[in-house]
Length: 300
Image (cartoon, rainbow, N blue to C red):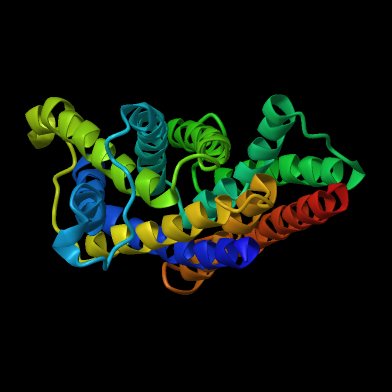
């Protein structure tokens, strides 16, 4: 069941990337990210209210305990990690082609796997090592194809994307750690609220005073769909991690298959360039993910 939930999460993540790209086109990043956290918090507000008074909704929603301050500390740390990853990732998404961003995001399982080796004492077998090597080759080839569009590995937005990928991998490892003892709905509901509070501070202190000197904000219909698809994807993801037998390395790899949806969108609708070269890079990355997946099954 946990693997089925992971595939469902991957599909939803692909559409999330598409709507995120549409919403950020020629738009201010910070307000879009703030609205994402606002709408996500609203979606889970009934669960939070229900956690304090179950009688209000007549048992319609699952009830979890919200009075444990110790658990809130773990969720707040997660909110900081995810928000930093989003800020770097949103700026990268705005300035880089989606056919570059998608495959680069697909390398996140590599860092999750390496983190699992360092922090959870997991060991790489031969198939997994081949997968890591192929992924590294794919990253460098993506940098080569990006040069033809004016993007280089040392480009600021590419560095932003790389930081976002690392923070995303850290978030995945942290999720595995906390999800074994905290209910998924508690984590998802409250970390959206903490993100909203943090984004409000960033919006008022960093963006609002300089809003006239930066890219202006304009409303786009795609903004509404960002939190819907992201929250749905995270809902399935958190529940998949709650299974005792769930493997974070496998789940992380499966979730990155969302790149197939975003890549097809960039190719068919955004008419992005150098697709043949990027497709070869994507195939390499997909092969590396497959080897890592098979290696993880073999290992266990």
